[in-house]
Each structure stands twice: as structure tokens, then as C-alpha cells.
Image 1 (cartoon, rainbow, N blue to C red):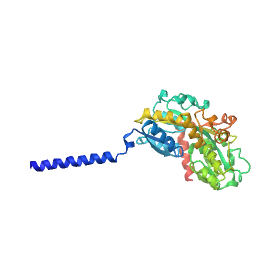
Image 2: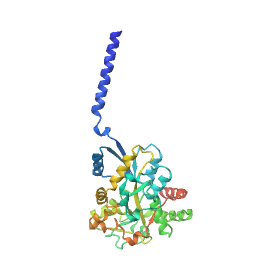
Image 3: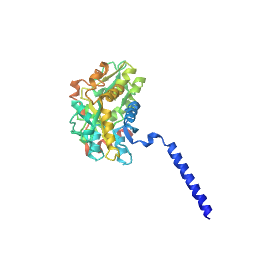
Image 4: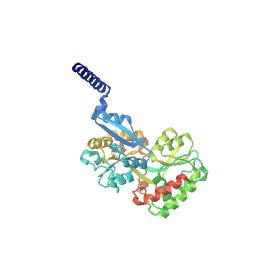
Length: 352
């Protein structure tokens, strides 16, 4: 009996040693490093930038992506995401801060907050950068193929022109789509009037037969391929499309259009908040921000970047809007309880 116990004990030790050795040998060095989980827009990820942060900090960064603010909010609200750094747009940062989903930032750990463009400082959704810091910014306007749309569009009404039926795309974004419809009707894009939102819905219903696609990720390639000739669009992807197809242009409507900024924020549920704030500061560093802006053709929130960009980028209105237009643009704002009117109208538009 004792001999049997001894052999059993030896066998257990050998198995344990084998498991231990297997675990150690199969575990990569990266899995032993602190890990940061980054949830960002689908085209924002630069493997080189991530690799540089990993190498200089001795950490691992895991990236996941989303394609709309609503998708970001829905996932974070599940409470099971495990993300550390997220990139909500301006109005969504305000919503997430109000809902207690964002951690309060220690700005001493993010000194590059001092480098923000003047028009990105003291924004209404978070005037003291308590929860969020602008990262990239731009405008919403119209991309078009000048070989087909020979008259440069000057109004949102161009997106209702039956001449281009089946060759128009709209962003797949509730607030952006209703915002332009409201502006075209003479309302603020932040209207909380249910009657105004209904009028915008009816106008969008009339437009729907003209639309090839509601897409926030492929409109630039649809333009390049010639499948659409007019697109409701963010400026950056249109600037990138211009490189592929010189006849593509960008126009801002006389109704004012929209200005936006995507922000860097830390989730309240993050277990790596100090590392997350270090990562935010890294992304806002002038050299890193310059490389990001050159790749994406979105304007950087770091004001020192603009003058270091090539002239063809600095002067491209799809990247940097003219100053006279900048003053006329509207920011999307948190409409709070009125969002239910938008949600209902958006659902009705999409299922109609």
C-alpha cells in the first residue's frame, strides 16, 4: 500500500512538472506583459504606432474596432467588454460621461492636452477634459465625382437630386443622417422637437429610393469604383479617395454642415487606467499624431501638426475646412431624452 502511494505521488509530481513546463514553454513573452485593450474606429488602427508603444513601454496592446458610436455605446453598456481606451465622438463622449461609463482623467499624466487646437478647447460636452480629450477632427460634407456631378454641390439638397438616382450614398449613422435632413429644413441638427424630427424622417423617406447604400465604411471606395457619384461623407476618407481618383472632390453645404472630433477616453471599468492615460498621451504626441494624420488624412487635434503637413494636405478642404466655414458649422450634441424620437424615426426609415 505504501509502495503504491509512493508511485502515485511520484506520478502526480511528474504530471504536475510536465504541465508546469508545458505552460511555461507555450506562454509567449507578450502574455506576461501588462495588456491594454483598445476599442477604436475600424480605420484608425496603425500597427506601427501600436508596435512602437508596445516596444517602448514593454506592454501588449489588443485592438478591437467598431463602426458607429451606437455600436460603441451598446457594447460598453453590457459591462463585459474589458476595454481600457475607447474613442467616442464628441456627443457620445458627453453621453458616456453622463452615464458614468468614463473614468476621470488625470491630466498631469496627459501633458499633451496642452497642445490642442484652440477650437477644440473647452468644448461644451466636456469643457475641462474631465473625461475625454480630442484626438482627430474633421467635417461632414459631400464627396462627389466631378466628371459626373459637373456643378459643385453647394447644398444638402444635392443628395435629393433625381439625376443621380441609384448613385448616392449616405452615412449609416442615425444622428449624422437626421442632422443633415434637419439642417436642410432650416432646423438645428440638434433639434429636440418631435415634429421637426418627423419632418426630417419624411424627407429622408422621399430620398430613400435614390440611395444605393447607407454605409459609413465603404463610401470612399464606392466613389472610386464609380458605383456612386455623390456621397454624404466624412472628409478624411474623401481626401484618401482623391489620391486614387483625381476627379473626386469635396464640398461643404451652405446650410453649415457638421464639425466633429473623435476623443480618447478611459473606461471607468478599466483595470489599467494609468497605462491607458499613458497611451492617450502617446497618441497625442506630435510625431505620432503627425504620422497618424498623414496616413488617415484627418486633422489632428494637436495644433502643432498642421504646419508640418505637406501643403497639399494642409490646403485640402476635406482635411482642414476654410476658416469662414468652420465658424458656421454645428457640433452634434447629446439630445438626452429626445434620442427616443431619433431612434424611432431611424428604425422606421431603415425598415420602410
